[in-house]
Image (cartoon, rainbow, N blue to C red):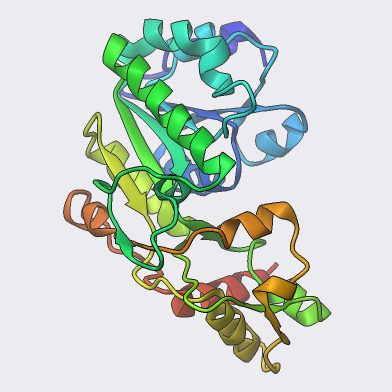
Amino acid sequence: MTLARAGRAADSQGMKTLLSLGHGYSAQALARLLLPQGWRIIGTTRGRMELLVSAGIEPVLWPGTPLGPVLAGATHVLTSIAPGPGGDPVLASEAEALADAAPHLEWVGYLSTTGVYGDHGGGWVDEATPLTPATERGKARVQAEAAWQTLAARCGLPLHIFRLAGIYGPGRGPFEKIRGGTAQRIIKPGQVFSRIHVDDIAAVLAASIARPNPGAIYNVCDDDPAPPEDVITHAAALLGLPPPPAVPYAKADLPPMARSFYAESKRVRNDRIKHELGVRLAYPSYHEGLAAVLKAESLR
């Protein structure tokens, strides 16, 4: 894809163009909503450009391609890129390009995580809860949110922050491990997680795009925070299989990333996406969500 093509003005008056930075799982779900509405979507990728093309996305190699010309033709921006050791990689190289584009951008979304709240012993948190992350990943997200907010305050960037709970959906469900006999029910008394189906993430983002409120922060989660072992047990029941073996957390063989999730226990409120954005969750709990995932995976 040439820079001239990436940065060209909308082909017709009123066409919306989304620049998706790090066009991953959640952004792909949003694209499936927007493309049928006539949106033009440009997605950055580190490689495998043909995968984006096959999905109707205009690919841009990044890092490596300056994004100024691309931003000049965008009306909306979504970034799904996690912070690295040096902070947010988008801001590290593209802050001034974003500042230059701010006057004509209608909406900017930053995908963060509910990990910014830290551990609350299973208690409830909302968007006004102080940020006290317990993990290094959570701390990096707090710093990245603050950096985006600083840029927005400086140049008028219409920033919206979305704090996502644990994401699941087709291709990201527990069924393969359960079938393969590798799933475990990790037992840690008092542990609860909030989660969200990827299609509901897309619905929240689309609702925010339709009702921009620069500066807003939204928790994106379902209505039913639950112990992880309950979710695995229900998934096994959907398959007609017995529950996987129970393993005490202290004895569980977990990779560092998975173990870090168990360092925090909280229930996340989602009132704002309902009251402000009018979102009605398609999958208000893991019961509906897992059934939908199983059906979707059976149709592949």
